[in-house]
Image 1 (cartoon, rainbow, N blue to C red):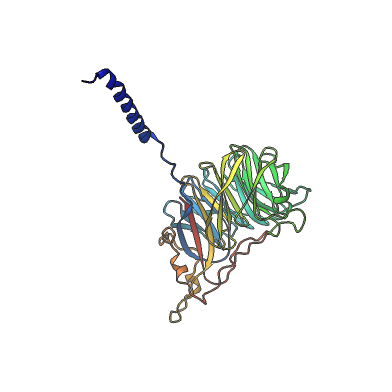
Image 2 (cartoon, rainbow, N blue to C red):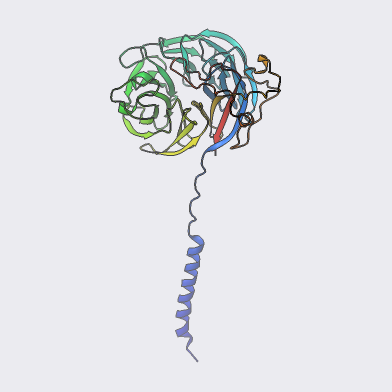
Length: 418
């Protein structure tokens, strides 16, 4: 009979090997799941007339505003449906104060209104109105212009005039001011499109305190976003040949995101964009910045901020031609863009509709349904060869509202997310 003292070590060693192997198999970390890509979640479509420019979300009160022609259409951020409209309010877009429940339509005759009732309060003059900005630090609305005055400032509580900012250009001239951004701490930043720089303005004194040159890749800067926590600006530039870019010179790049310090203007890095940007927004929840382009088939470039010094072009989503401006719902992390397309022509046997049947916005009682993710809008799919041409998306400085009155049109409000 074999001695147990000689068998036990072998048995114990074998058991240890088996247990260790088993343990390794059970505790080996699984491969990290691939990040979900962004995609179109839904498209809401309503009749519209006139042009469009900006789209603006109120994440607190769950609304998104799209100005088209002389009507501002209002959609629910959760159901994607049309819930109301503000008529007789022509402008490029809507600045919103979620706390005071007020809005200001950025137009020559700027309509100051109550966002809860969608009732106008008063109309104020805003000559040359184009873009806009709401600053929560001062509770001021800023209307941006491509001429003098470069900035017009209104109190968001009562719509009263606060002041103006002139000669915002780096040579002391009036300039073409595009998108603005605020750090919420008293510093405002504005794209000076025709001079390839960013003007820094003190929110309280309304004085220009600095100008940041965007370098050789910063021509035609139109979209602007900010990571306020890390003091980083994202300037979306169209490059040489893009609208607003100076002709010739050293600015010879294509569409580019210039990433720079909001503190001193030092350029950190640059990244290519899928198309010439006309809008940008930063999401602090995901540390991503989005740049929308309406050129070609339409695109949304997505840049990931891995750290304050590390940035990568993460993804590009195809949206729709003409979807050039964007906004963010910080509750759902959804990005919203909008565009116009020609409505399908009626069949030859159909009775031609009266002009009043293509009202700028559908009534709140009959909201347009949200389209299923990835599906084509019903009206669009019905368009056949020989249908009306697509609505114009030409949006030049100072009058960038694409989609002139070229017959019946459809407004597409597109929701992008994961």
